[in-house]
Length: 190
Image (cartoon, rainbow, N blue to C red; front, top):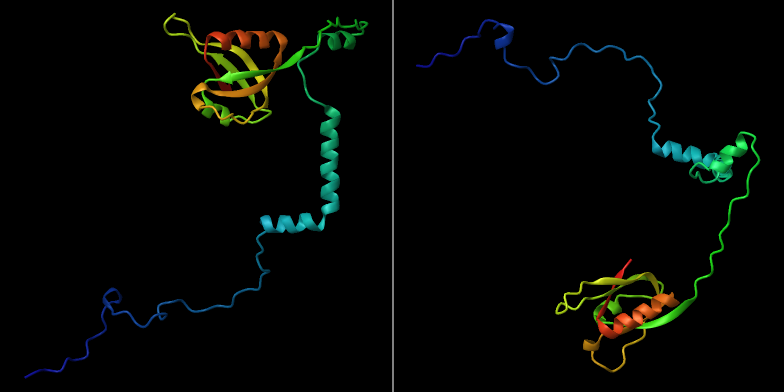
C-alpha cells in the first residue's frame, strides 16, 4: 500500500528547490535617464578629417614646408662653426676631378642562365674565376657596373656562355678584356 506523500514542512533556504527562472532576482527599480554612450574611434576621426579637409591640407602643407626649410641634417661643418664665431670664412679648396671616360664593353659570361636574369639598368659585379690548376683564386674585375644591353643569344649553344654589354670606365674595360681572355667570367647582382 502506498502512502501519499505528505506536504513537507518548509525546508531551509539552501535546500529549497529552485523556483522558475527570474523569481530569485531582486525587485526592480526605476533606471535614471542618461545620455547615450558614443565611442569615438577611427571612424569618427576619419569623418572629422573629411569634414575639415581644408584645415588638414593646410596643416600638412605647413609641416612639409617646415621640413623642406630645415633641410637635411649633415655632419657639423668646421667652416660653419668658424663663421658662427665671427671668423671670416675661407673658401674650401676644390679639387678638379676629371670626368670618367665611360665605354661600352661586350663581355662573355660563362653561365648563360645567369645572363637571362639580367635587365638593362641592373648593376653587377664581374668576377673572374680563378684556375684551380694554377691555384688562382676568384677576383672581382669590375664593381657596380651598369648593364646597358642583354643581346639575344645567337644560334650557338649555351655552353659557350652568353654575351652582356656593360658600361664601364676605360681602364676597367681593359681589365675585363684581359680577364676574359684567360679565365671564365661570372656576374653577381648588386
